[in-house]
Structure formats: C-alpha cells, structure tokens
Amino acid sequence: MTQTTSPTSAITDFLKLESAGGILLILAALLALVFANSPLSSYYELLLSTPVEVRVGALEVAKPLLLWINDGLMAVFFFLVGLELKRELIEGELSDKRNIILPGFGAIGGMLAPALIYLYFNADDPVAAQGWAIPSATDIAFALGVLSLLGSRVPTSLKIFLTSLAIFDDIGGILIIAFFYTSKISLLALLIGLACVITLFILNRRNVTSKSVYILIGIIMWVATLKSGVHATLAGVIMAMFIPIKSNKDPAVSPLKEMEHDLHAVVAFFILPVFAFANAGIDFTGLGLENVLHPVPVGIALGLFAGNQIGVFGFCWLAIKLRLASLPQGMSWLTLYGTSTLCGVGFTMSLFIGSLAFEETGVNLLFDERVGIVIGSLMAGVLGYLVLRISLKST
Image 1 (cartoon, rainbow, N blue to C red):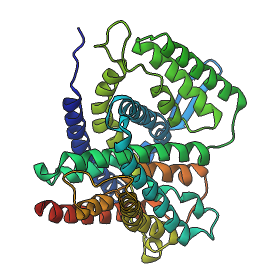
Image 2 (image 1 turned 30 degrees about the vertical axis):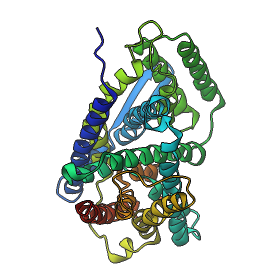
Image 3 (image 1 turned 120 degrees about the horizontal axis):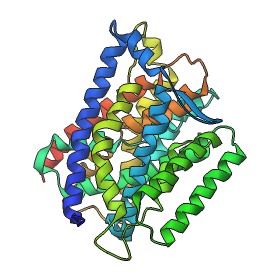
C-alpha cells in the first residue's frame, strides 16, 4: 500500500530538507577551502582529476571525477528540479496564475540586472563575456538555509514567494544552459536522444507507472545527450516532464511525488554537498588584490549582490505598482527588499554555470570566477539576513 503525503506536509518536509541542506552546503564548501589551502591540496586535485571510465563495447564515457560530478550527479539534481516544477505547475502554488506574476517578474529582473552588471565590466573581453549568466542564479538551498536562522518568525508566504521565484530562476537557468552553453552537436546522438523523448512520451500517454522503466530510458537519454554536445543535465529536466503525476488505475499512486520524495534527501544531503566540495576549492596561494579586482570576479560579485537587489525588488515593485500583482500577505516592502537581497546567494548554480562558461572550455584563464561567487553570495546572504531580521521584528 502506497503512503500518501498531504501537500502541506510535503512543503514542510521540503523546506526542512532544503534548510538543513543549505547548512551542509556551507560545511562542504568550507571543507573544500581547507583542502585547497593546506598540505592536502595535492590530494584534493588528484581526487578530482581521477579518470573514471565506463565502457560497453564500442561505447565509452571517460571523464575525470569532477566532470562525472558536474555532468552526472547534477543531472539528478536537475531531474528533481523538473519534478518539482511539473508538480507546482499542475497542482501546486504555480497552478494559480495569480501566484505566478510576482515571482515571475522578480525572476526576470533577477536574471537581467545581474547579467547587465556583469557585462558592464566584461563586455570588451570575448572570453570573460562568456560568464554573463553566472550571477543570474539563485541558490534555493542556501537561501532557505539563511531563512531557517530566523526561526518561526518567517511567514509561510515569504518562503513560498522565494521558492516560486527560485523555480522560475531555475527555468531561466535551464534555458540559458540549453541555448548558450552547448558544444559541437552530434546529429546521431541527438537523434537517439529524440527517440528516447518519443519513448517517454508514449509511456506517459499510456500511463505506465513503473519508475524503473523511466529510469532506464532516462539513463540512455543522458548518455545520448552527453555525446550529442547538448549539456547532459538537460536530460534530467526533460525526463521529469514525462513522469506521471498520478495513476489512472489508482489515483492515490503518484510516481512523480514518490520519486520527488525519494530524491530530496539524496540531493540535499549528498549530491549538492559533493558538488560544493568538488567546485568550491579556491586556492588562495598567490591570490593578490589584482586577482580579486579582476573584472570577472568584480562583475560576478556585484551582479549577485547589487543586481538582485535592483532586479528582483525593482521588477516586483513595478508589477505591484502596475496592479499586476500584490504584496504577499505577511510581507512588507522591507521584507520584500530583504528577500530580493537574499536572492543574490547564487552559490551552487553560479558555480555550475561558471564551470560551463570557463573550466570546461579548456582556456587558461588569469582569474578565478569562484572568488566573485563566494564574495557576492556571502555579502548578499549577510545583508539579506540582517534586513529580514529587522523587518520581521516590526511585522
């Protein structure tokens, strides 16, 4: 007998997991910094560069461990994002159009303003300009982790607004990766991936609820997408769109919700911390002021910190003043500003987009974009926490 979970309980469990996951992310990032700046640094680099190969006949997938984490484990993360997105659009907060407008406007501003600030500093350098999307991402795990420090005073409407905005932000991130961060396309591999999509569509239309069948097709699609030149994490999002949200035979059975529930702990407590550990190891040896003040880290830091304050708050203000949306119940203008600032915490997704823009290009760069990500996210997190602490006291 399948155990069902009420929507309220599911949201509560989700927020608890993401909040705890945010704290674990911080610890994993700090551990990476310790490894990268200690006598253990050589072992840290050796671990991440360890070659891992899977071969079946003539088909092989050979990558260093770092790219298995970024291309493989993060595909599971994006699969979970896709499951959450589908559930929210069908029967969650985003199924009501009135709840879409404000976070939708905020997400657009939160992607546009940071990108423009970054390009203001880096438009003249074609290589550096590739990182324009890095400050346009919000890390929901970190943001909810900061919110958890404020305890029960945080209204549910604020959490729902922030989560909805992050979902729209993830949609934007997915589209950016699909259109701007793909390499040379292999037509054969792309056709195999398309065949997998058609198969998933048929399974969905016939209301096949066997999760193992979807997983098998999903793995084949991931390999095909990896070989096609389109970034492999997109396979996770596409696969999620075809997972049935309910069974025609038994409405109490929901393959989508079951998979979402099973993956939350894995993603929050394993995949994202492992990703943070593998990507946050900045070596500060020889790092001077000229490195910190390079246009790339400056553009990222200011894009995350100032861009989200300007973009998210500005676009939300515009939507409310145009009477397209209203301020969520329990939130003041100061609370909205604090939440907008908190959206500048872009750690996980910013690191991921940074790896696509720079590390995987093979270009030997004179800067480390992770410095800007850490500085910008830290400033946004601290200011957002302080503003929310003050605003929530007065409400």
